[in-house]
Amino acid sequence: MRTEIALKISGDLGELKGVREAVRAFLDSTKHIDIGEDAAAGLDSIAQSRIILAIDEAVANIIEHGFSDPQSLAGAQISLTMRKEPKLVEFEIRDNGVAFNPLEKKPDTELYYEEGLENGMGLVALTTLDCAYRRDGGHNLLILRREWGNGK
Image (cartoon, rainbow, N blue to C red; front, side):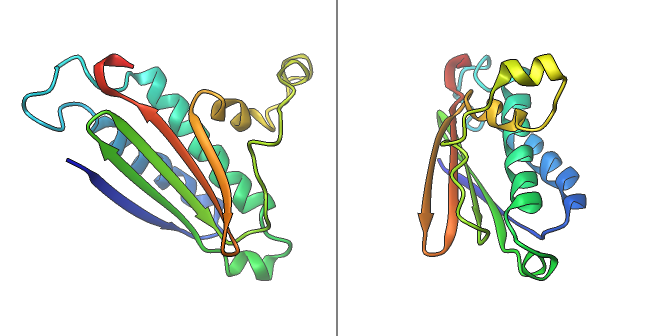
């Protein structure tokens, strides 16, 4: 059985709280999508937090850096599609901002810890997921996947 939920997001950082809440509710539903499933299956709170952080940071970076000026930000088209299959969750983030592949940017975690910086930590969260990026018809498309069945 496959479940899919799509959200439209404006260029307003104030929407991030709602995005986090929607992703958490979606991830909470990974437990028992079918009656016959293993009661221990599903994503634990640490795995959920990593996914929420990665999505939050990806969307925040799109809003903060993906558009050259306030006028282009006003025309932002950002969407988050969440898909759930029997042993996999997938999140597709699509935007019409400037081309940017976050998987090519390697965060310097040592610098972040030494200097106490927060910027770029979302890129670290991406490394905990199976990620893919492509430019598709003037849109950035970032796919994040995580197995969830059998306690993975």
